[in-house]
Image 1 (spheres, rainbow, N blue to C red):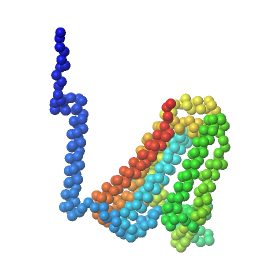
Image 2: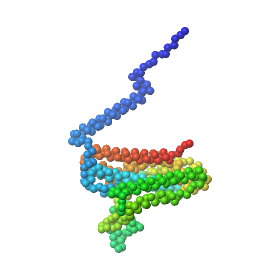
Image 3: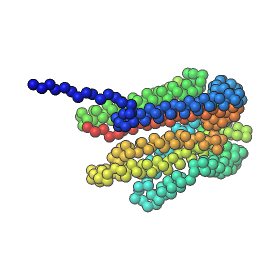
Image 4: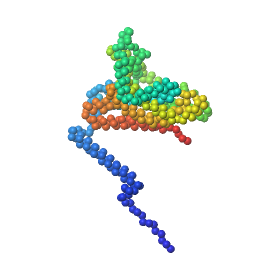
Length: 410
């Protein structure tokens, strides 16, 4: 009879943290984290010490102090007696405005240019190639300044619209293009529900959003009906009614009316004044980013198998229908990820607005406010935090959209 005993187990040794591959990576990460924390604490301590030597403290109280400067374009109420926080908010809204307009126009231009660059028409494809190569190989700042100079120098002064036989006339009697900007009709409310115009327009947008949601549900119902019966019900007049009637009723109740711009004294009054700085920045950002998006769209289309196009043609689909229903939906999974990067680039490039005097958040919070208060550290931290949050919001929204349109495998 024999007795079997287990071999004695080997305990943990400190040398395993270096020589054992099971623990080595963890050891490296812990050491790197400790070094990073030490570096960060040294930076904070050194910054506080230097601020104390300069007689400064770390305080955001300057945001509640009167700003003392004007902002030439604002979508909310503001005057020189408003606080620096209010001035920063005006700049933030201006930045969001130009970023939204730029992303929308750049997407349209990029998709059109990317599709047309693959055209069999030699002239069209070469013109698109000139546009793409011309804009993406010249610095954005030059395009901003060039477009601003063209709009200022090539358009007439408001005085040219004066007199019985003026040198210039309004376009369709409602649009005035001058060297001070473009004047377009505005919608005002005679009997608004709220004193603040922002909330009235927010109510209109909510009703319009609810109408769009209703249209999507109606289309979903029509698709289910088609899959069940084979016949798709006619819904276009319901869609048109949902889109127009609720918003129209709301605007009638609030007494909406057109405010057409007109020449008053030495300048135009009424309507909406789009400054040349806004238009130049918007067009330059859109054309510049649109050139990059065009290449992204072209690459996405080329990534789709040519057999898909041939199969669609074999079924009798026209080229336009094939592009909209077969090629582009499959190319979206390739297009959207780099498209997100272009949207983020456009948003951050809007900080070049200072070159043409457009008062965005870089000019207000990151410029005049810092110069007046001397709070450069606090101002730059807030400015960086704003761009970080805005970029994360854009990226998150686009990633949600990407997840909704990607191919779903069964």
